[in-house]
Amino acid sequence: MSAVVGAVAIGLVCAVTVLLAWRGGWLRRLGSRTTEDVYVAARSVRPWVNASAIGGEYLSAASFLGVAGLIVASGRDGLWYPVGYAAGFLMLLLFVAAPLRRSGAYALSDFALVRFRDDRAARVLGYAVLGVGWLYMLPQMHGAALTVHAVTGAPAWIGPLVVTAVVIVSVVPGGMRSITLVQAVQYWIKLAALLVPVVALVLAFTAGHGGDVLSRLAPAGLPASTQAPLATVSLVLALVFGTLGLPHVLVRFYTNPDGASARTTTVAVIGLVSAFYLLPTALGFLALVSGAASERPDLTVLELPGRLLHGPVGVAVGAVVAAGAFAAFVSTSSGLCIALAGVIGRRFFGGTVNGFRRGALLAALVPGLLALVTSSTALAGVIASIFALTASTIAPVLIAGIWWRRASGTGAVACIVVGAAVCAGALGAGAAGWGRGTMWGGLLGQPALLSVPAAIAALVIGSLLRPGPADAETILARLHTP
Image: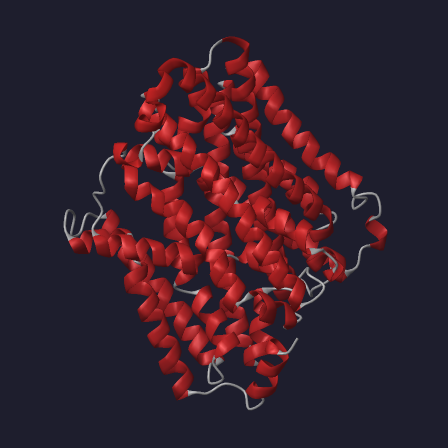
């Protein structure tokens, strides 16, 4: 791909992001912004717009670049990622979406105050959100660095700086108001950015191989699974329950008008996300059967059009893919910035509009600067580890807080501390090579099957030792009554 064409495609996505925020009027009416506007868009976002916005922020670097790369690198094992990513929203629909909206919270730390009446639990949950959010933003910055260097040849550090700048300009002035329309449009940009190359590549591949296409695309052609069964179960557990605790997804449910619309939003998201994941999966298949996979799996989606399509068509399709990839980095980073700004603004800056803006600035700058001194070579694998951390900390607290009367702030704190410690310890041991080549080595690399039960046990023990508030029944009635 021409470096100039790639740079123009990335520049257009960044310009569209800022212009959409301006078009929504959020940047022109700064003086009229209220706390509800910047934190939760005045709780007025309709289900289909919100569903598109959730799709825009949820489908991150790991989804856009990493899924196809994992299928290339690990064959059938890579197929569990899109399945787990999509299935997590079914759990959100069943257990979290409507009750969370009815809590009336602005941020997850507020939910802890509402449910547990415990400032310590709110503070610890807020720190967990900050840790998960910043860890999740780093792969977006690394994906931007990878894309900028691969597409334009420019230094990799330009990618994180561009994403950070766009997020600050789009999010800081207007908050949730300024980014909702942007993220909704960016879902459809990303969908088109993968649909176009899939159609073009399938047509090109069909023309070159005639009637042999279907047999070559058969799943039997994928490399066999090399992952231990328990490690696979652990991975799926992390992906499904990790979705329940993603701060940038959860904060979107605060923007719905009521609990019923939160459920409708979740149903729509399941359809949108499932449709999207067919496309990177198809690109992974195409890369394998065509023999055109990149030497570096995360570059497969970016390089495949240029390897299979020649001339201006290849350049144009490659530019579309680059634009979609950058939309993924910007939209997910924007959503995370909103979620983190909500926690920072509420906990440290008084919960005001200016407090939100300060929190958003800090939320964007920290991972942007960290990305300059770190790197990642397996985007989806890194995200899976973060999902395991989320499934071991935030998710059990949410589920217990919504569904178990005895759940308490003490139990929530114990859950987060134990879950984070076991998950981090297992990942560290796996990275050090402990148990390599054995079942235990697989579990250390995918530790949710170890850390989630430990976190739940800590939550139960802590809650039984020191029960929750006396009015827990009244609080639960508020969460569950339409």
